[in-house]
Amino acid sequence: MNRKYFDRDISKLTSSPFGIFVDQAGYTPDSIKTAVMPFECSEFTVIDEDEKTVFSGKTKLFGYDESSGDTVYSADLSQLTAKGTYRVCADGRTSARFTISDDVYNKVLHDTSKAFYFLRCGCGLDEKYAGAYHHLPCHCDPAVLWEDKSTFIDVKGGWHDAGDYGRYVTAGACACAHLLYAYKLFPKVFDRLKLNIPEKGMPDILSEIKYELEWLIKMQRSDGGVYHKVTTMLHAPFVMPEDDKEQLIIFPVSSMATADFAAAAALAGSIYKNFDTDFADRLINAAEKSVTWLDSNPDFIGFENPEGCNTGGYYEKDDYSNRYWAYAEMYSLTGERKYHDKMKALMSKGFPLTELGYWEIGGLGSLAYILTDRPKDEQLYKQITDAFSGHGEHLKGLSDRCGYGTAMSKEYYGWGSNMLVMKNAMIFAINDLICGDKESKKYARRQLDYLLGTNALGISYVTGTGEYRTNNPHLRPAFADGIDECIPGMVAGGPNGRPADPYAEEVIPKDTPPMKCYADDAASYSLNEITIYWNSPAVFVIAYLSDK
Ligand code: 9MR
Ligand code: ZN
View 1 (cartoon, helix red, strand yellow):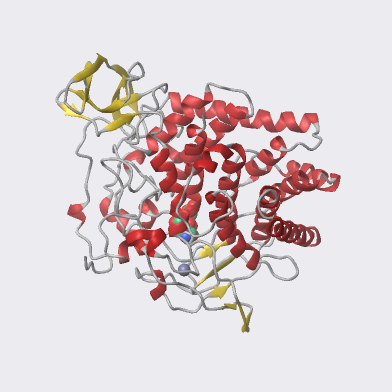
View 2: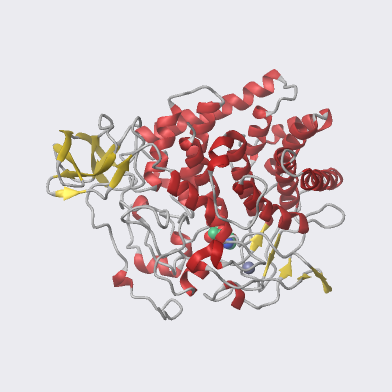
């Protein structure tokens, strides 16, 4: 394929060939299974691969759904528990194929986890591990300090952030933390998960996260401050990573990056202790150095792109939640009271206690506190668990009011909305596991169903999963490699009611309902990019739902 850079034929952008929407990865036998029909119908059937009817029932009118603009009917297939592959039919229309079995999540868990390997920077991807998507080493040269053009530093490694080739500390720390908490809560799921990556000696997911953590450590300055990002001055054109030869620049230290790094390193230190003590010691020392820096730099040091630079900014308006997270992890790691007190003092700043990143990130600090075996202040513990319960109840209300079961109001569909859908599912998971609200699980599953096809476009937003799926993300190597089938396991940003790039404006008619503001268009970064921190909450959620 020799496509010219974004010389695209928008008439080729597809819409679902199916009229009934289901989770295209499938359902475990015991789960609630809901198919959604955005058209009037009173009855439905389920057929197997020989087109034999195996189940039938009456549909239920949900009514008008604001986010999609659809009047929605649903079919409850929960009583169908026999393993097999099926389609739902109603009024002459059918759904995509779906499976009922105990291991429906295996492929999508594998693929979304392996996606991080495909984003590795500073190394080549060997055919042995990457198959057709192998490529030569990229971004290996030392990077120059923005503040001192005579200093070059080795910051090779880590994952490309997204569709672009930048590497950003807050984004990376956030993605690592989602994955580390997934491992911490569902270790058995990951003990079984084989990713076919070069490293051995610990669960593959931990080897993969280590690849990013090693890079994060390199981003720490000798005084403990952590550089915000390393990127070229401008985003590369749509070339393979090894063909992006522009000078890499290390941009100044920010307090958000320093705090997020300290937090992720402390969390990681406690986990890697059991697998690689030298690495764990390095993480713990690095975390301590960065919190010491935070102590002596109490003021917010934000980040703004210097003039002429158009790579990601990862702006934040303050660093309270980042510091809170850092002190919570340090308390969990060391048990030292001073960290507990600092964490507690920050709570008066009024940031949300349950947000899971990348900007407001206090939820990870709250999780650290809830999960630690260290002594806990009863009132604080209650305040935090109440915050999670309150957030969960709010989301349940939203889910109940949505024809697709999505815990989103129509304003929530912004850039990378699929991350929010997955973070909402994480909130449900936390409420189930930690706050004892078992009912939350079915809501979590509904969010994953949405990601994998039970949505107003009937599309699976994960490359490689589902009969009708996203396949043309805004992801440089996926475009430049000339391979028609995208690298599997990439979570697309998804519908964005506030499209923010010229390509999106071209393909999304005005007044399109937010849940439908999406196109599988490689050009559109505000609809169809991928990022490490959109994949990481998906991995968490799929691992949670795979846990037996
Ligand atoms: O994910 C980010 C989204 O929340 C912001 O609205 C958007 C615009 O600032 O930027 C997104 O982050 C991008 C980052 O800046 C650079 N790498 C790709 C990210 C995903 O689009
Ligand atoms: Zn690279």
